[in-house]
Image 1 (cartoon, each protein chain N blue to C red):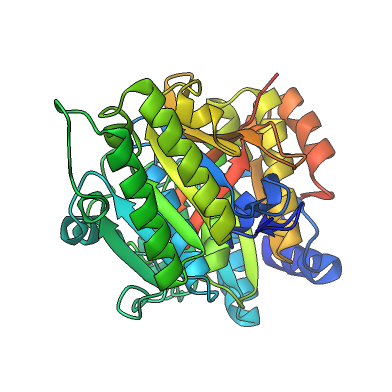
Image 2: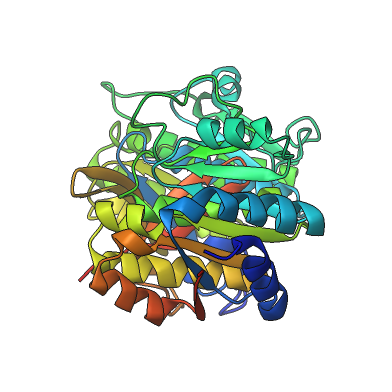
Length: 236
Length: 189
């Protein structure tokens, strides 16, 4: 077994560690799911940056934007070491660098899916990566037959566990019932809540393996000092 | 009416930090209360001040204080009105953070937390101006929850949490709520 039972990956995001029982299950695969603009990418980057600043190297794999474009999106992050990317503590990659790009009738074959996992595992090993973000998984999974997607996710989960690398799978969408969610060790749901016409950015922990996690709904704010949360008031 | 400054200063000295206090004041004492808290308490003790303004834009308060030559450098505003009136453009972002509406109570808590983090190592006073304005926008039940979270958070950071309430505009249910969430209610005579 690569990771001892009960080992947690302390995210360094104080507010998150507090509500997930001290951190994510080490070597696990956590889904961060939510609609457009709900803060998934910033959440994921903070996870990597906090890790990088604590000596845990991170890798961000984009399946959508090129890494150069991604850097232009980054807002002011006062908590972050400004040289975190230059130092290589967080590396940015594009999914096109993984696998051969082979498609069969527009679909990713099982062989290609395994090649992608194999390349990711190799990058984790050679880069001594302990934190990974795949943003987003939907564009890859949508190109796979259902059974191929399941094999891809299973082999990715296994590779992560063996490498003791804790990963966030970013999933675009409102629901939490896809294959990615079912195979995840934890699910964090981001979204919006409306109260009397006011729109709130919210976060919920739907599932976190091996932890007595919070079930509350939190209002969140992605500030230059990092993510902050507070329980949503009920008023009843 | 007696001078408010000695009453406020004595009470704050006596209570110390991490004790929530509501100063129940008459409208005519509002500005004296404000200048006492900011100039004669915060500035003198070199405290940073988180000023939560519900109905008066931060720019107006800054102008008023500066016209009296009061140093405003250590005040950080959580301005809950300027966004709605579209007056937030051109405001000094280092000094003011905005909440879109006084009904978005959770964001007031989060902005306060943000300012605490930003001013790590500093000592703070948190002023909520005012309970009545907030009660005009929110139901008492949600306000009660909010006040508990806000006060607990400010106290947990070792700040001086100060609420301002107006004697003339106080609804009985708001007064009752204040007795539950405040450690001290001081009516300034």
